[in-house]
Image 1 (cartoon, rainbow, N blue to C red):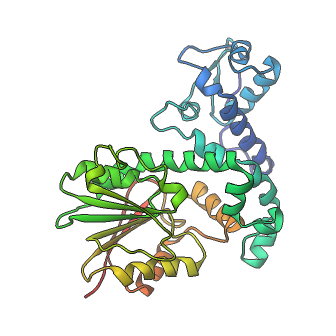
Image 2: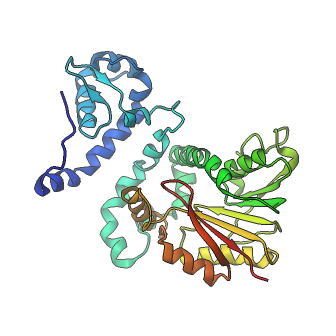
Image 3: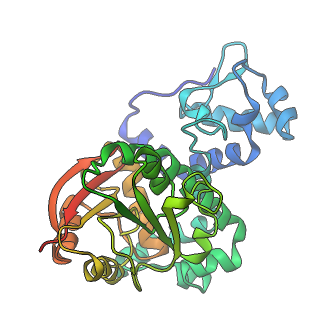
Length: 342
């Protein structure tokens, strides 16, 4: 039976850490094979699972044994494998599924970029174009459509899971219109419209993103009469006035892009309008290992960064916004609630 070791001594822990790629690859393999989806609540032998996912039984057993060491699946004394809380998160039908997040963080392009981290740290800039010959998003959509699809699914999953929490957090007293800036498929906006029947909203994001907007917001959808879908780039222009502007998980670019996006809000917003910025932080979160890892990945692929509370406050105040309060949305996100001064 494979067990998860507790508090190994430093030499053993460092040996384990330098093999971190093996763990990430094992999680990716299990997600791509659909092992968690094939395993229900009845423990199964590796041979049975191998038949279900069309894998070689002995090799699948080795994969499962490795994952059990990290608490992903459990090997029983009778040689069967059972779900754990973590392995269930790799099921596509789990309401808290992290299957596509796991795939996104281990996409093929990441394996070419991570070995160049020392160069990115020396220069402070992205190394993606040096490795792949194109800017990150151009490469993704032109050369790696399968990876682009995984990205969209991962962002959709993440947005769906946090949208209701955002809607529950925000007090919309006195707010009759809202703009979801860079809002992806509009899950946050849809949750807000669902919660507030008198509210109207606009979803602003790139054309290729909003063409897949939440069906509830599109023509014929339950909230279509109160929603407008606006293709555009918030770094170029935000041609909408509203009582509230929401900008979630996109101020992670280079500083110039962040300044332009916030400046475009300030250029159009009326005095007294509310601006809510929702971000992961790298200094005030229970999820530091994940957030700091994503921070390094942002450095590699787009030259961006996750924020500290201080750096986020500085960018918002430099833009001219007045911060009213900072509140956690969940274990991963914080909301910076601001107003446009008179």
